[in-house]
Image (cartoon, rainbow, N blue to C red):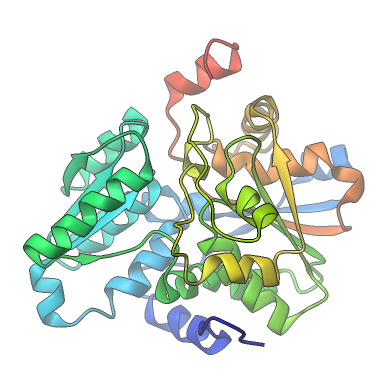
Length: 326
């Protein structure tokens, strides 16, 4: 089914081939302690081992590689809660393309520092992702830069969907996939591929309570704005855009359920992964594990859990763990 969007399984397969020289397959590890603790066969998809430490490099690569030579010469820009900006900066550097990354003042210092190391120009604008998006639009109009959207774009969605092809190859017995949700680009691509190749697999989304724009939009039946808040899972912040073209309808179609998480449950999952599985995950990256720990009795027997990023602000983490932050 293709309904109101035009992202296809063929787009995802083409993206997989297109980005293969820039984005390598990431490992899927059996999480032994998590499996023993929950009673299910839990597997961790380590997108943390991508360049710049997150899955975002997939969509960024797929989008930027399809720009014309003239578009590449003029440069690119994006708005981001951090990881997408790093992905765009990395791919732009690899292809010698100028890049301007617009972020809000909520982006943690660790991610700002990484952006600086990647050599992109950085503009810090306003208190949320929507403010940064407005600045990107100005750069497009004034300087001719091409905007590389963080989620609501068919090429971005197709790039993120390449994860599903790897999961189905490595875990053919998979019964459930657990995916963090912010703007919805990741779960849209994964959900589309999963439901077309192996439709019985349950697609479970996870996000933060009290600041999930996708959750509130689904309740209202239309995209709505939700104020951002301080959270250790900063990569799950941001709206889905009131003029959303792809991800809202795709999430409604392909996501089977959404689990909302407390701040404490995410912090505990970060600690669990670090101490028991020796995996470093930022807050959003640990959200899938938090959902499994929270609702283990509702999970299918064989589950793949996305660990989406490892760009952790350690000071923030230590403060959060001790209850001094957030």
